[in-house]
Image: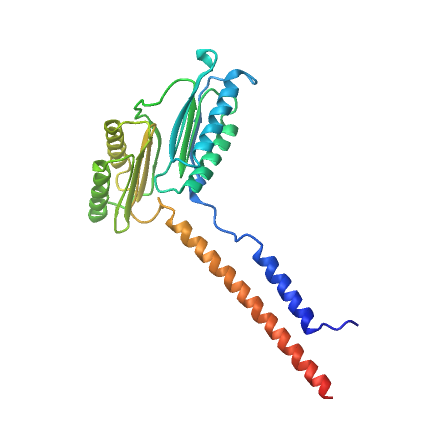
Length: 285
């Protein structure tokens, strides 16, 4: 029977360590890719038509642009007015460029399956928004309610509701298309689509916040998505609007991976030590 030597054990340990270190560390799926809503127009185009080619060109441009910009819009002209397609994408204001690009690519992929052969469609993920249509919507304010979601009621907590209202009022007054605010456990976020002007954005966000407070009342959290902006709040950590918790989770995964490697190293050293003692004992005889 073959005898396992100390050098053999060292080689086995090195092989195991290298194999494990080459594996990707499993990290939790990013909330930025979570589906929020989507919709498609009823009008359809013929497969192989110039309009289909223009849509493919548009969506490719959106994905490419997301690698260096958090917002962009395109108009793809056709040989006839019926072939023109308009589109845009926008990422949540706190996303890095790599996260933005990943989110937009995921949204475009979902658009392809959700709105196959339709002349218009839109998908909102937690981290980004993509829309295209054969009718121009660029620069047009639209306060149509697309999605309303309210959490369970916490009863009328005067303090919590006062803080919520103050946070949302701060968002309404803030400038810029992306706005975040918070106090204690209460956090809020609002964002306009980048094609709106300052006045249009202020008007849209104010409308979203007003509807949110009226419709969700004493809910622990609320989401109000209008066609060109949204406002959201959470009074108890029910929702997370930034990616900080994802970074923390990845760090925890790296720590777990290091612990596993350390344990394997410890086990290998114990085996090597016991083998050495056995050889000394056998040679002593």
